[in-house]
Each structure stands twice: as structure tokens, then as C-alpha cells.
Length: 272
Image 1 (cartoon, rainbow, N blue to C red):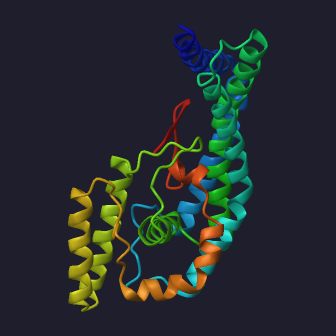
Image 2: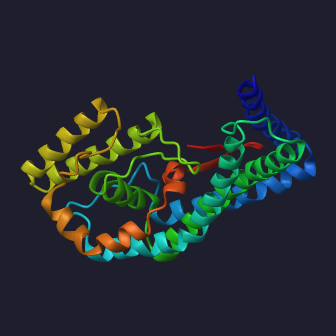
């Protein structure tokens, strides 16, 4: 049937694109070229962590998120806007390949090669841009004076908790709808450190609220704190005057790796 032929084409297109990418990575020149943005991202992460510590050591302040810290967060988001557009374009290339599977007729050879070329380019673009996005984010955080842990804390509470954006919506529009297990672990640990800090400051009621939220997050399908938007009133009062700016600087196309951290182990690169 025509439909089954086009489905095979889409599957082959993805597989061939990945094979082309792998073959280039196995060459010395290609490997060095593809590794450059990741090496820069690793260097930027090390500089950021040397200054502000890792995301796993960040302790959210007992006084909450202040307006001046939210403005710094907005400045970082603004610096990342160009990368948002890059990932939108990559998503369009993947969508073009999917369109071949939706038509009523078999695609022509010209359509096949055009879609394949766009897909292969998108795979290369996706890999390189992931490194460049992480490098730019880390450099923006260092330049504006914010740790990755604080960035993650504000990002999740603003976009996923308060504004209700679905976590992990990929650049091609698909959404897992939940934090990954690693992301959930990072967030639960942050919430617990916040609760401990509140308890140490003699704020028992607030500490109990956040500790209970940590327990709910562990059982939650999404892993999002206060997923129904019922954040503490103090946070909502800070967020509300900036609602327009926050919404305008949200990027669906990069939401699946806003929290990522790139590390190098030997000759391999890992993102977590």
C-alpha cells in the first residue's frame, strides 16, 4: 500500500540520517568538528560551577525569589532567544519529513532526496546546537551572576508550576509531559534542601509545606512541584508583574534540555 511505503521512507530517513552522522563522527576531522561546541560547553560549565557551585549543591533562599533575581533570570532568557529560533527551524525540517507520510500518493524521488537532505542537516544541526545552547546558557549565567541551580529553580517554578507549561516538549512539538527520572531527582533534592533551610531558619510551617511537596513530587506522574499552580502567595506576588515578559521569553523548542549538564568522559560526551 502507498501508506506503508511512505512509513518505511520516514523510518529509513531517520535511520540513514543517524548512520551518516555516525560515519562522520568516526572520522578524526568530523569528530573534532562535532566535539567543538561540546568542549566549549564543558569549559563554560566548569567556569560556572567554580564560581557558583553545581546544581546539586544549590540551596534556594528562605526569603524566596526576589524581583531582582527574577530580572536576572529574564536577562539570561533573552540571551538564549537566538537558539530558540534555531531549534524551531530544526523542528520544521523533521515536520517536513513527516508530511511525506500523510499524503495520498507516493513521494517522488525529488521529494525524497529533498526531505532526506533536510533531515540529515537537521540531525547535524541538532547535535551542534545542543552544545552551543548549553555553552551560551552557561556563559549567560556566569555573565549575569546566576548559578545553574538557581536558573533551574526559577525556570521550573515559573514555567512548569505557575504558567503550566508541559515539561520536556521537544523541538518537534512532541511532549513527554513529565520530568525525566534524573530531572525529578534533581528537583526533589532542591525542594528538600529548601525545606531544611526553612526549618533551620525557624520557619516551621513553610518548611512543612515544601517537605510535603517533595513527597508529592516523588509520587507525581509529572514531577512538577505545585503542578496545579497553587504556589505560595509570596512567589506569585513576585511573578505576576513579570507575567508578560516571562511568557514572551518561554521557548517550547528548548524545553527538553533547559536543565541539562554536559560532561566529558574520556573521548565521549554525556548530557544529564
